[in-house]
Length: 169
Image (tube, rainbow, N blue to C red; front, side):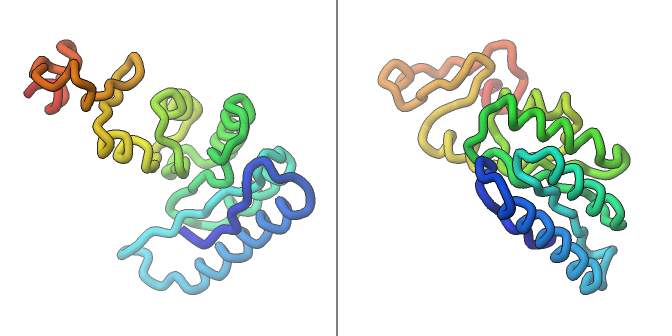
């Protein structure tokens, strides 16, 4: 991915447009410098914060470039869920369906389900691994604190209906 000028999604005004335009310029520089297309991929990062006009402008500019995929950035930084999902929907609506659409920094289960339904293909986030590292298991009904005393001698599957390797032990 090219560098992008990341700002808080709750910022508005000229700084959002400056960041979005800078991200577009950086993509152009990356495309010009990208000399090994079969050894690495370059994804364009869509910016624009929560401003639909700027996000649409960025989408228009970025989709003019021939890149292997697109990342949706500038979100998951404290905005309300309805605003977040609205900007994800706006972004995926204008991105090519034949190229990967990667939503950056999203890892909460509800967000993953909603954003897959909105057209996102890939995600990354520290939340699932950090949660596991601190002794919790993510389950459909929330999370289990496996370090709690009640689980010290409990060797039952976390979810008897699940077929994942952890639940099958």
